[in-house]
Length: 419
Image (cartoon, rainbow, N blue to C red; front, side):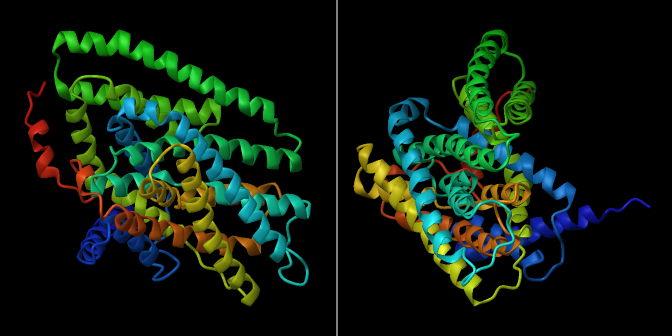
């Protein structure tokens, strides 16, 4: 008999994320924190009511793709161009300093008299891999929070977006370099060529889409419903190609698709449509799914101490590294802090990197618990800290439209001429 439990799980996620979102809002915290907590509470870490089913996982994947697509559509391309050099510096610092910090912590703990690892790789590579895990940035958490508090289109918001995309690429390179030293089947040259190939493909695909569809559509005056569907198809196409053929994160493909669409007319209408879809279903499922991944294994005193220190280092290395990079990029002091805070969250990205390390024998199973704690804490505190560091920036406000945003302000776009 076919199971319909996924319907119950979905209903439970939507209800709990909304209720806890309202609770966190009462305490002046972003509602995304409530959604994350809902997943943790419902999942194996607390109540164990549900786990991450294949249905939830796939809906969550679509959710993060739509989230980054919307972020691309709402990005000021001129501002992104202006922050391009600074974003690169921020990303480089945000990768090198966490690698050094993670390596230092692992070097102290990863030894027989402290923590006995069951990994098969050399101790040096094991320690370096812990550093590579700390380079991960889950920009989706930051994007949703910035949308909710109305700061996505600020100069610091654009710098975070640009740096996060570059950070992903540098993280892939760092991961490939370390794993290639343990796994001879991984070829760093091929990976680099694939990354360059994807961006070349993105430029060509963007130009063709704009020339053969967008220009025709803007002249024809066809219905907006059909346009929204075609745009979504383009987003999914770019996400699929990025992940399947070039080994680049699907969210990078979605973000670039959004940037391309941001250059077209009626972008705000399309963004409003996707915001509605995201608010009703995709965002709650995605953020809850992160919490559902959390499983807290039993740990001895050494592992608990390792987890605490690694979490502190994970937070400080992103704030200091990305903040220092922003300083070199000529950002002001407050913006440097905002950019550093915006890059803290590790989210599901760190868990994916950690699982890769286990496959190639660079991370012991007993180190997974501390990594989960790092992911959990950095994911929850990032929205809270972002709210605090942007609290004194009233002059930079914009229309809010994220998870829990003010959709009445966007209603004007939904009343346009439908086709």
